[in-house]
Image 1 (cartoon, rainbow, N blue to C red):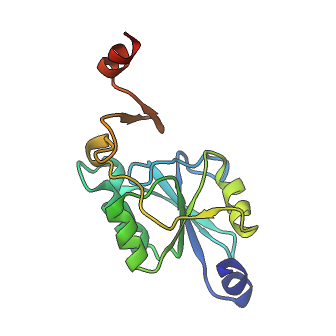
Image 2: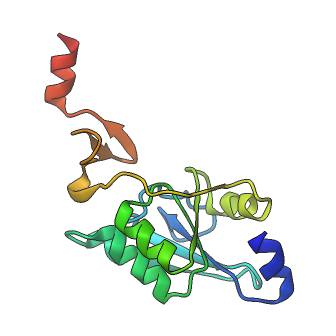
Image 3: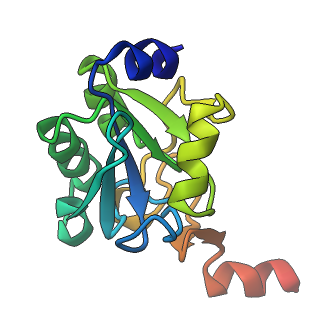
Length: 158
């Protein structure tokens, strides 16, 4: 277990979490590349810092920009919702472990990680270029939930 070996062994372990806010009570943002903030939490010292996600305002390549930013920050572990193919590959190649979280407080997610209750991400999620799930449907992401465009909803209704 990474946490037990590194945390108690004296090694620095930084866990990055995609966040909707700037404190431990903030909810996790399920959107990795488009999260507004990242919290970087040191498991040894229980100290954290919050940084603005460069991918949040990126016109394209948000996942890659976010992944590179967290690599540069020295993150060992990332907890988020979906990791697109490009971000996943970059993080995987950098040796960063990825875990799937849910929309609960960052404090609760950190505790779940310590108790080994988070699912390890072993494959990339769908591409979300331009906010759509290109490979799977024409549906769009809205507030972390998948919704069908209005024209498709009307068509399916009739």
